[in-house]
Length: 146
Image (cartoon, rainbow, N blue to C red; front, side):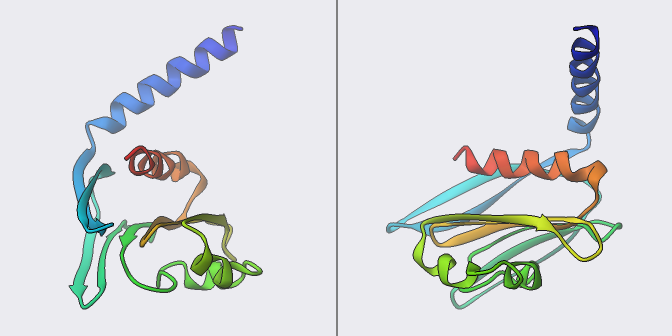
């Protein structure tokens, strides 16, 4: 019981210290003829890479340890997790048939990756070490709430 309380106290302190290092951002995507805006918080200290052209609109947030969070309206497979998704049996066919599909795992270096295809856009992360996985999962959960 004391260990559980201690764990939650540490988690709360950790969340509070991280919240001061977070930045609010958003991503707009057209769905069913309407533009929907997804807002989420991302850790500061990233190098932004993004582009818009044709049917594509992608935002990437790169960190010094090579971890990255992305959100994209690119058709087909997202470029960042292409190799990881390709290695999941049947993933390519399933991505085209389902409204929502979540694929995740560890890459060849033992780092975490996750991709969520939701309707006509995808978001996820790649190259995430164990100690940062919880932060990236919080971003995923925040987007999924919309």
